[in-house]
Amino acid sequence: MTKIKAPQSKCPVDYAFQRIGGKYKGRILWSLKDGVKRYGQLRRFISGITPKMLTQVLRELEEDELITRKVYLEIPPRVEYALTENGYKLIPSIEMISLWGQAQMQQHGIQGMELAEEEQGIITDIDE
Amino acid sequence: MTKIKAPQSKCPVDYAFQRIGGKYKGRILWSLKDGVKRYGQLRRFISGITPKMLTQVLRELEEDELITRKVYLEIPPRVEYALTENGYKLIPSIEMISLWGQAQMQQHGIQGMELAEEEQGIITDIDE
DNA sequence: CAGGATCCCATGTGATACTG
DNA sequence: CAGTATCACATGGGATCCTG
Image 1 (cartoon, rainbow over the protein chains, first blue to last red):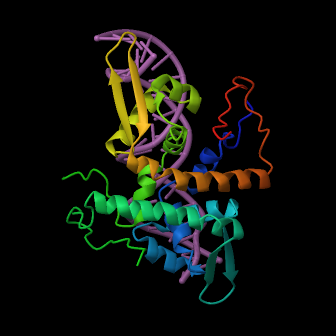
Image 2 (image 1 turned 135 degrees about the vertical axis):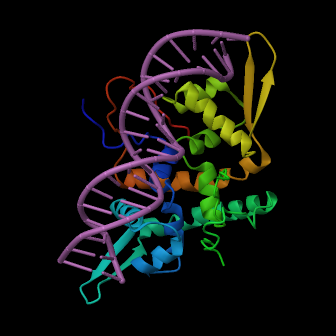
Image 3 (image 1 turned 180 degrees about the vertical axis):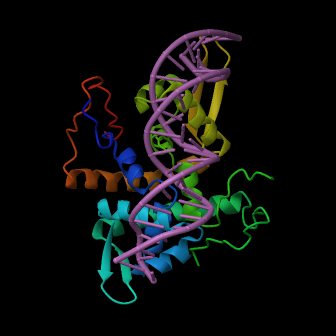
């Protein structure tokens, strides 16, 4: 049956979206644009992501060589993530998308979106 | 239970990725950059997408006002899809991503990926 | 602190058959 | 031609608990 690891079609758009798609990858890459961040920082930054998902996504990004993972053997443990060259090359694209997103949000009047009363606090305003 | 249609966090990156994420949306928008296309054209262009998925994604894009859907009441029926202003504003971003994707593919030596022998012909080289 | 393991559900996606 | 309808399945994502 010759299973193909990922039928990443020859279309670059498709190829790219398979790497930065998913629910969090864009935001994680984006939040690393300012420089190195620790696991806990990302966790607070992404707001609402579970440890499992964060780890999973970070590993995928690492495999794709978009970020690096540097472990410091200390007590308490410290792990720092940073963009690679390849990853950093992606930032301008994400920035354009972000600008587009901002414009759309304004246009659609999305600002004070009412959540269910549950988690009013989890805001994700990465952009300052 | 007040189901929220989409908890589109206030982060523009997240917001945007919810709209152009998914497996096909990027390619569909990209394939419309040259101009209007009919349902069947898209179907052949996206190569491998099922009618159900194509319709579903097109409807979502339409709801998000990224594309328009124009129905001609003729025999045989004809439906044309085109980018809206909002959708077109997204093209430069997708183009950047595409360029990045191309570079990555070359860097990773992905070119002659062997598909199952079934559909050797369905290439998705949207970029000329 | 930075995760790993496990279970579970929601959604996304696919195959096939059928229709105005 | 341009879809719909239905069913089934894979993946993504979430909750909770545990560990070096």
